[in-house]
Amino acid sequence: MASSSSSSHYNLATLVLSLLLVGGYGQLDPTFYDVTCPNITSIVRGVIEDALQTDARIAASLIRLHFHDCFVQGCDGSLLLDSTDTIDSEKLAPPNSNSARGFDVVDRIKSELEAACPNIVSCADILAIASEQSVELSDGPSWSVPFGRRDSTTANRIAAGNLPSPFETLDQLQKKFSDLNLTSTDLVALSGGHTFGRSQCQFFTHRIYNFTGTADQDPSLNSTYANTLSQLCPQGGNGSVLANLDVSTPDTFDNNYFSNLLIGKGLLQSDQELFSTTGADTIPIVSNFSANQTLFFEAFVESMIKMGNLSPLTGTDGEIRLNCSRINADSYGSRGALVAEY
Image (cartoon, rainbow, N blue to C red; front, top):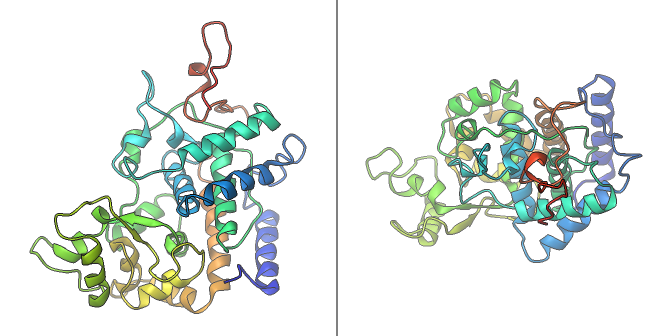
C-alpha cells in the first residue's frame, strides 16, 4: 500500500507547520543541521535501506530503540551506552535484554555521519531520524524531524526496568504515559508502531496457556488466532521464537494493526487491552484509526514529535558522543586519540 495520498501528505505538512507555529518543538528545530550536516537524512536513509536488504525487522527495531530511549530520562541516547565502571547499561534491563536490537545499525549510521560531518550529530538525534526514515521506508508517513538533542553521560538501568510492558493492563499503561504528559491518543497512536516488526513468544504465551494463573486463555484473544499461535509457540517451547506483531502486513507501516484489534488479533496483551478493556476511552480511538489510515498517520506523527521532545538535553548540556556506546571520556586513549571501534 502506498504511504499516503497527496491529500494526506498535505495534512501531514499542515500538522508539522502548525506544531512549528505553536512552538510544539520546544528547543528542537528541524533546520538544526541544515548548515552543519545537510546530508543527515540521506546518509541515515542509505544505511537503513542497506540494512533492510537482509533484515526485514530492522525498521521496527530502530523505532523501538527511540521509544525505549525517550521513556527513560528523556530522549538523550542513554539506551545506547554499554556498561563500564561508571555506567550501568540500560541494555541490561529486562525490557531491553535479549530483545532490544539494531545497535549495530546505529553504530554504522554514526560512523558515516562522523565521516561526513565530524562531532556534529548526536546519537539521540540519530535515533529520532532513524525512526522517521524507518517508518517512511515501510510505506508510512514522513515528517520533518526536530533536531538539536545532545547525548547524556549517564544511564538509568533501574528506570529502564519500568518501561511500558506487554504484560500490563490499560490502566498501568495509561499511568506511565500520563506521567510523561502523553495522552490516551498518544498511547494508541504510538502503540500503532506495532503495525510492523516481531515479538518473542515469551511476551505473549501467557495469553494462550495461563492468563490468570489458572491454565486459562485470555478471553479477548481470538480463538482461531490463539490456535495458530500455540502451534508456533508450544507450551514449554523456545520463548525466543518470533511472531509477527501484525498478522496481516508484518513489514508494512499501515493501519491494519488496529483492524486486528477489532477482531481479537492483537498479539500482545498491551495491544489488545486498547480495544478490549470495557469502557476504555481508547476504544473509539482504535476504531477511528482502523477506519481511517490518514487519521492514524497524522496522530502518529504528532505523537512521535511529542515523544521525541521528552526532556531532551540541548545547548551545552550533555555532549555529542563520538561513539554511541560510550561517553567521550571513555572514548579516548591516554594520549587523547579517539579509540575507533566502528
